[in-house]
Length: 426
Image 1 (cartoon, rainbow, N blue to C red):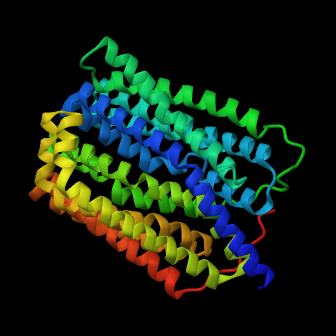
Image 2 (image 1 turned 180 degrees about the vertical axis):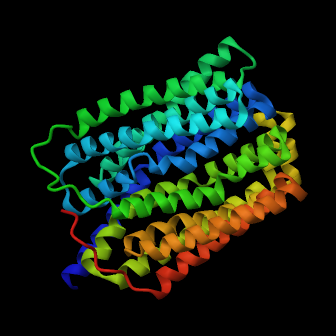
C-alpha cells in the first residue's frame, strides 16, 4: 500500500468517526430550528411570516458579500496550512465590518425610496444587520474551527445561532400571542448579537485569538469573490423567489411557500453536516493525492446524499401537510396543494450541496460560477412567468427545476473534468 493510499484510508476513517460524533449536535440544531420556525409562524401568522421570509431571503442573497467570501478563503487556507486562526479571524472581522455596514445602509435606503414605509425600512435594517454583520461573523468563526478539523466546535458554534433564536423567541412567546414583523426583527437581532458574543468567547477559549503562529501574507480574495458570487447566484435560485412571491402572489402565499421551503431546508441539514465534515478532506485530496481520489470520494458522497434524499422525500410526500398544520397552524395546511415538487426537492438539493463543494475543491471556480449564474438567470425569468400564473406552486416547480440543473451540472464537472492545481495561499 502506498503512502498516499494509506493517508487516504486513514482520512476516510476520520471522516466516518467525526460524522458520527457530530450527529447529536446536528440533531439538537434541527430541533431548535424546527421549534424556532414553529414559534415564528405562530407569532407572526401567515401574512407576517411572508413579509419576514421575503426580507430574510434578500439578506441571504446579500449575505455572502459580507466579508467578500473571506470565510471560505480562511477555511481553505487553514485546512491546508493548519495555522493562522487568530490572524484570519481579525482579517475576516475587518472585512465584514467594512463591507456589510455600507450594504445595510444602501439596501435600507433603497427600501425607503421604494416603499416609503418606515416599518418596512425598520424590518430591512434589523434583518440585514443581523444576517450581514453578526451572523456572518459567527459563520467565520465556524469556518475557522472547521479548517482546524475541530468539527465538534464548528457544530456548537452554529448551534449558538439556533439556540439563541429559540431562547429569544420563546421569551417573546411568553409575553405575547402575536407580534409584528418588526418586533420579530428586533428579537432576531438580539439573538444574533447573543450568538456572536457566545461564539467569540468560545473561539477565545478553545482556539485562541492571539496565537503564536501567523497566517503569513494575506491570501488573495479572488477565490473568495468567486465563492460569494456563486452563493449569491445559488440563493437567487433558491431564496429570492420568496420576495417575488410576496410581490406577485401576496403575503399569504409567501408565508405558505416560505414555511414549506424552510421545512425542506431542515430536512437537508444532515447532508450539510456531512459535507461540512468531508470538505476539508476534499481540499487535501485535490492538492496532495490527485483528481481520481477526489472524484471517487465526491461521487460516493453524492450517492449517499441521493439515497438520503429519496428516503426523506417519501416521508415528506405522505406527512408534510399534517406535520405543517400540527406544528405551524392550520392555515399552513395549504402546503398540500404544491406538495409534489417540495417533497422531491430534497433529492437534487442534497446532491447539489455535495457537488458544489467538490467542484470548489477541484478549483473549478469559473466553471461553477458560470453554471450558477446561468441557472440563476433562468430561475428569475421562470419565476416571473410562473408565479404570475400559478402563485407559490409555480415557484415550487421552478425551484425543483433549478436545483436539479445545478445538481446535474456539478456532478458532471466532478465526473468528467480534472482538478486544477491549487495556487499557494501564502
